Amino acid sequence: MTLALDGLGPIGVTLDVRADGSHLDDAALLEDLGYSALWIAGGQLATLDPLRDVVRATRTVPVGSAIVPAQVYAPEDVVALRHDVEATDPGRLITGLGGAHGARPLHTMNAYLDSLDAADPPVPAGSRVLSALGPRMLELSRDRAAGALPLLVTPEYTAQARQVLGAGAKLIVMEYVVLEEDPQRARQAAREPISFLTQVGGYPQNLRRMGFTDEDVATTSDRMLDALVAWGDVDAVAARVGRHLEAGADQVVLVVQPAGPDASLPAQWRTLAKALIHDEDGPVNTV
Image 1: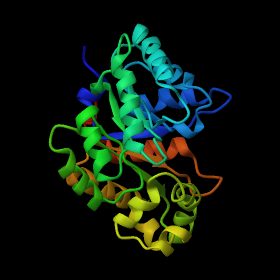
Image 2: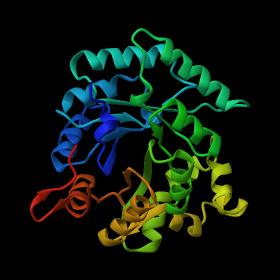
Image 3: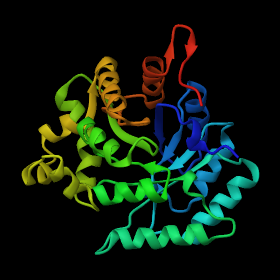
């Protein structure tokens, strides 16, 4: 059976879950626009059901969790989700895992993966990716999964991660995007979500590894935002995405942040798809 990660295209996008179910219409739109994968952030998942629902609201596009947090969901939950989805839509679910915090994160994630391997049927390594930042978690992503799914990283980090992963593992980089040319408005649109992340898990340590200071991390400085966020006009965003791809990313996942309450997210998805996925002859990024 072909797995979703086997033919992963270069441009994915994140999808927010809404209580009224309107995200299912968004999922269908994003598939029609040609995005190679739809990713759902784990922090908004009260249950894992939205992953199944998005798969069934679309036709062929891969759907990934970004991520299922190990400290919230037991391996049995992940196994049950995969079994449910595979029964109707085989090969379309990408199991993104992370959130193995605490004193021994590698031990925690290894034990979690052991449980997925031992399930009947298992969640195969070729269908899962890990939210990896440090070198040892990247190595685990290479050895026990199909690859890595880092967030809040620079193109320089992407190049270093590719060296650790080698040529065979997938490197899927999540990139915050703000289609706004005014620096103050663009930074403000990204500052709130990034400020939260800079205080949790392995993000602070990895930001320091990439050369940011304690003050950068504590204040979510402009310097750090400019290095982590693709903001500006569509050409500036395309250039940043291109740098990640040239550095070794297999896919860049667009985490689009509207600048201001009047910004239309669907309109921005369309603009980005036209610039990054399509050319004059039609779609060029297909699964």
